Length: 237
Image 1 (tube, rainbow, N blue to C red):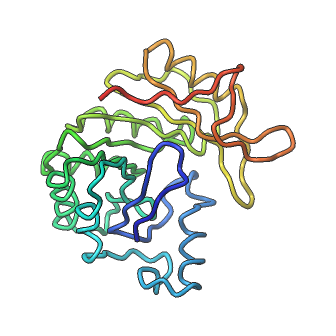
Image 2 (cartoon, one colour):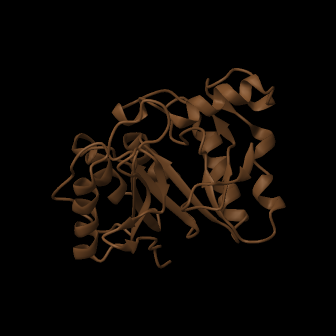
């Protein structure tokens, strides 16, 4: 499954893998799990087993069909570094990234241990942006793992941001995204938590991207203003 994306920091999604399982508190209200259930009900062939992990070899060639350069979010419906994804399949994904090199590929994982373990076995093309998701201060170790990889560009997604995170070591980090949780039973993100991350990015000269927040009435606002400014900074790469 590959589609144009409504995610503000990318242009389209490419899902050679679908399905996942929860690994930390940020996964509690997983949007991909909800979407997978809807796609299964709609009869989408890639989701016949719902949100169970599935590899889709037939989807590997999709980036070659897109002739115009795009920012592509890889596996928005899964995690490339899921412990049950074979290394050979991960290498196939990286080979597509290397060959279809007119695109920029954005990869996110919560499984930073697996990422670091496999790092030396992978060919990191310069058009690969590698990121980790961090929801609160309990998971900042993922940043330390990311920093040790050979990825050309490294970024962090604090989404959903579920607590204050101070004393961030942003050395070697090229981009930071922040957003609140959306959907049913969404947990709150306090504006001071966002400012705390923003100010640390400013001090470290790291581009800061504020994706979404809820207003005082609980309405989700895409690309909101923070302190009278729209924060849509992108990495220079």
